[in-house]
Length: 196
Image (tube, rainbow, N blue to C red; front, top):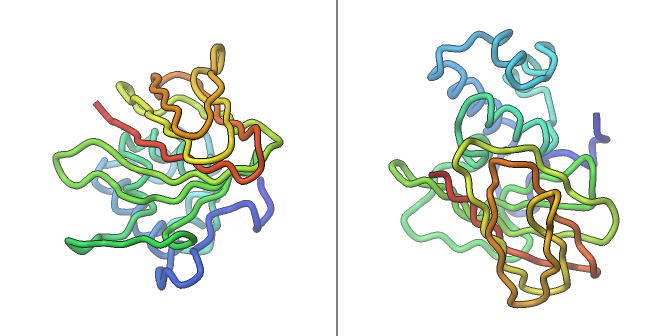
């Protein structure tokens, strides 16, 4: 498991109790899916005690744990971390619900989750050179779109990632193993996840 600093943390000024939101969201989606705690834990590859802590609001999950739960629940990741939104919403730099990787210096901020009957999420990525952020496959049919704003990154399928600079774009199957690695300090990118 990751240290507390490598896990989901609310942004300063967001006003959201992210851990409480995650707790309610996991329980809601598990019950919608008609799954027991034991079955969801088995599907996600996590301990039932970990899931119990998360649902009670006592846990502090890493982005990897949340992705595993989202895949097991067959829902977009954002459904577990993104609160309901007003019609017009502004997210300033440094605001929004942030999740951190336990494997790399990588932070993802949900900018927009897919509304009902839509199947896409938008994330702002902030990453530093170092460990590669390796992602397990997401829901079948997922396509990721990456646009680098500053810095340089290596992104795409695990076996054939591409180097991207400011303004460069790549899309690739998100339902296969894939990676993101910053090649320059303070790399910023936008990732759009399209759930087909």
